[in-house]
Length: 522
Image (cartoon, rainbow, N blue to C red):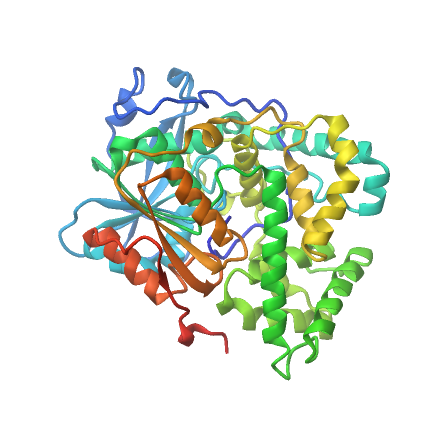
């Protein structure tokens, strides 16, 4: 999941789409510290840096590319170019620290350009590097074109006719295959971690120093399992689960987001300007009615597509990622309820950006040609590639009603939204079991895991469970604050992460950071 990013594409579009014929090659890979046969040419390259293209790129940011095999099992059958960007160290550099902002599907180059100031402290000792993983951003981005937005358009009808739901999923899968090109069968965290090692070598680093947010924690953990001898200083912030199936993750996400929503509404109703009044209980009832009303009668928008209740839920999901966004979210909801104006909420869900569709491509694409739905399409493709559970059609049809009840009990607002995402892997081949079976008991240098108590996306218990799974290498920092991930919202977390990456200073296992009072929304 994204770590408090300003997400351009709509989170809802393509949320249920799949890719027919997705094959996972080389999924169960042995740990290796030297390039396997046939990969030496990828490890011999160096990055050529130049000015970054695109609007509003910082002048001191430099961009380049790293070439990786399309298929690690057959490295002679084609290549992909991955976009990378770098802020140089301000003094003597000890190498690079690579960032992954989450998702899966978050663009590393664009996010580094936009949020680079948060990482300038790290340039005291490192070049700070972001990258677009395969299938993401400029790196052969996947897309689902005009795939159906929501397999559960009418939940009652879907439960009554589950075969219609399955057909919509199959139709969506065909759209994804048509629009995504050759990268789609080779997407997933196992291959992305192998790409990460090629990038490390191309940057000239003997060890990987890494800061991964949310989904980036999964990527970091998989890298550590594959390349334990190449792990340098590694921080995982907003720690993902390595074991729970997508169906369980969806319930947890719905519950966590419901809690975050209720906290937001409690805060909102303390303000006379709150569009839901001053009673928190009534506000929780009112917001459910807003979702239902918009699903029954969507509001027209300037972009030609109606704004539905599920679009509203998607905007809420983004706005709840950080307490710093709550005042803006409150104003955006007020504009909808008072004036029927959806533009501010659309900005949460889609960034207000419309982009043209993309033709399949193995090289870097121009920033303006990244498809509108790349983030949700990549999120879906990677999550499905990482998940080995594939219920058959009969089981999906049999369980749909029970799942609907369970998800709506977890959250009357986010339940349907999350259930739609759980169904997204139907029709895809079984994903890799490498993560669930092999990413454990690591023999690496100690790494720092940051968990936030009020995280709406990656609950704190996942940090504890993942730390236990990774073994004695894992050191847990308990961030007793709100929001998704800690580095960008907690000064204490920020200091401790920088101290570890720059100087190797680890906090004691189980130590904590209290909430920053001066970052409370106003």
